[in-house]
Image (tube, rainbow, N blue to C red; front, side, top):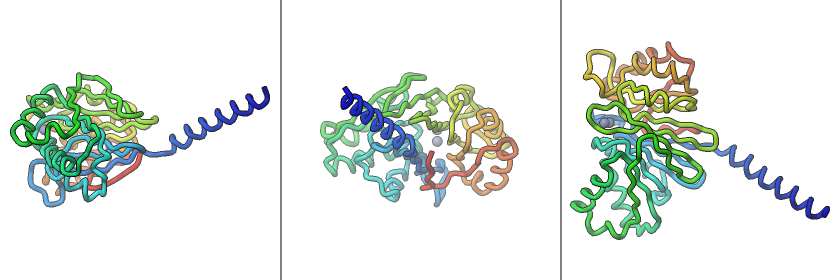
Length: 277
Ligand SMILES: [Zn+2]
Ligand SMILES: [Zn+2]
C-alpha cells in the first residue's frame, strides 16, 4: 500500500515536472519576410516561421522566404504545416521552391498545407503544370480552412478569420500554444473580425502597407488606423510587417503615430528578426 502510494506520488511529481518544464519553453518566432510587392533590397515578401518545441509552422511563403529559411538555418524537413493566408503572389510564390527542395532531399514525412477555399484548386494547378513528376512522391495534405475553424498542430491550436482585402479571400491567423498567443493579420484593411481574433494576444503581427493619406478603400492598413486597432487590442507587443518602402523610409514618424496610442512595445519588423513568446 505504502509503496503504491510512493509510486503514485513519484508519478504525480514526474508529470508535474514535465508540465512545469514545458511551460518554460518559449514559442520562437522569426520574421522571414517583412516586405511587399514593391522592390526592397532589405526585405523579401511575406513569411513567418514559428518554432514550437517539436515542430515548425510557416505562416505564408512569399518570394524570398525560401532563401530566408536557409539563412535562418532551419532544417526544412522540420516544417510540419504551412498556412497560406491568401493567393496574392507575395504570400505563396516560394511554395514550389520548398517542395522542390523536399523532393530532392527525399522527404518522406507528411506536410499539411492549409489555406482559403481555393487552395485545392491552386495546389492542383501548380503541381499539374509545373511539377507533375513530384506530386506522387511528396506526402502533402491539402486542406481548405473553414471560416473561424480551429486546427490542431501538435499542442498548438490555430484559428482563423476572414479579413478585408479587396476581392481576395484572405485569412488572419491566431496560434494558441501553452498559454501564449500570437496573431498575424495577413493583408487587411481595419477589420472587426481581426480585432476580435486578436483579443488577449501577447504579440500582434499586423500589416502596415501604406502611409496615411488617400489610399484605395478596403485593402490595407495605415499607421493611424493601426494605432486605433492596437489601442483596442492592447497586446504586449506589436510587430509591423508588410511595410512598403514609403513606410520604411518614414519609420520614426510611423512608430511615433502608433506609440502615442499604446503602451505596447512597438517595433517595425525586419527580415530575420526573432523573438520569443
Ligand atoms: Zn494581398
Ligand atoms: Zn501582400
